[in-house]
Image (cartoon, rainbow, N blue to C red; front, side, top):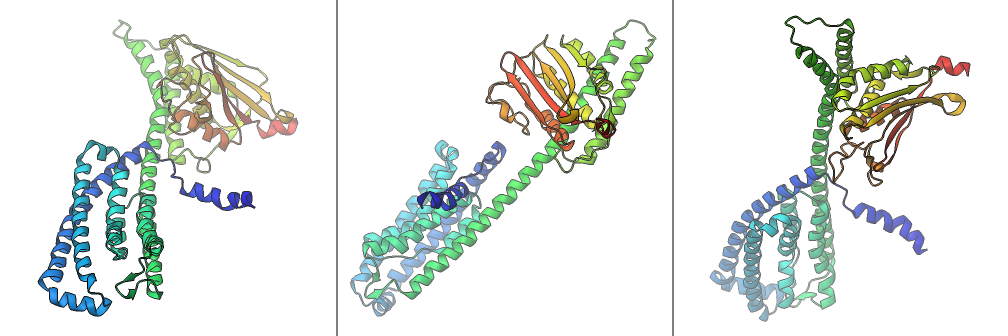
Amino acid sequence: MWRKLQTQFIQPLACWWQPRAESAEYLVWRNQFLLDRLQIALWIAFPVIVAHTANSFVIMFWQSQEFERDLLKLYEDATLILRLRTTTIVNLAALFAILFSCLILRQSRWGRRHPAVLFLFFSVSFNSIDLIVGTFFGIPAQPDSHLFLAQAVLIPVCWRWHLISQLVPIAYYAIIYPVLGLTKIGNRALYNTYSFQLVITLCWIGIICILSVYLYERLKRSEFESRRQLCSVIHAISHDLKNPVMGSSLVLQGLLLKPDAKLSVDRAVLEQLLAGSDRQINLINSLLEAQSAEVGTLILHRQPLHLKTLIIQVTNDLDAIFRLHNMKIIVSLNNDLPSVNADKTQIWRVFNNLISNALTHNPRGTQIEIFAENTGDRMQWVRCSVRDNGIGISPAQLPHVFELYTRGTKSRRMPGLGLGLYLCQQIVVAHGGEIGVTSQPGIGSDFWFTLPVAESLRSEV
């Protein structure tokens, strides 16, 4: 019975309560926003407390006769007058002390590093001080729902903090007071039908405040996510266009190093530059069609594709970079390798990203091998592989290499991490294939993916 209860209720509740993982950018914004709004709330609280103090002294001392008469008529307890005055003075002094303490902590290094703790201290103190002070003088107070609303408007971040600051005074009023026997003010009972209605009202107002805070923070998360997706598109364009442009630039720089005033250019060089320009245009059109590289939005133009021809084009584009980094590339493809049913531009991106990843994140002299073979049930899949004998990937990094913007924490040259691998995964999965990696630190990495054989060849098998 306990295990069933734990599975159905306790575990889902714990998962719901546990804070979600936030990006570092969002956490920085939230902390700064919290500090700024805390300062506004504290400065607003100062004139409010001053006005409340002036009003209380006018009622209790300037209009003391009317105050005492109404108090006796309502509660029928003469001792209540002195206790209520003392309670009010102590409560106001405590509010000023809390306010000045929060202002000082807000300016301190500790306060800037722990804004959440400062908020909870400020919020719980202001919401509960009336109730706590009233306990010592035998005058139970009621939670003020206006404070719930004010905090939700001024500091709309992290609904869990607001929930804690609301539950403390409500629980104190509904549980602690009855346990301590503080159930009356003078001769008038405090807990009755009206008291129960007050607790319900407080809970409803608290739920509305928490919901507003949750929705506001969700909106801010969406804003940060939209900004992140925009950065993803910009990085995708720069990432895909960088290598063809760099290859063309190196070829042109090599030509300019010749001392001749008039240069004769081989036809093969011009064809290579023109092919690189065509691929840049195709990449731009591909990115504009997709808008993002996620599955379901990627538009594919499938056709029978000879991988050997495509791979030779990719390696030719990167040949100048291979020579610059003193790296060797080996292409091991069978002559009878069947055509695949794939989008030429997108698969060019996959090979380009995988090879560029090995080039960028491995030391000089690394050897890269491109391998492909027919595999799967009835030989309906082609398994492609880009291997290197470089520095490898740590086991802790392997499960995350295809995640968007995953980076190594200790080495910026950790291979297999970044936007390129995320794009490769989305493209391969959109084709119906699979992608993965095997790696050992110090030995090298093997990035592999599968593509479907062209339909005409499948029917012949």
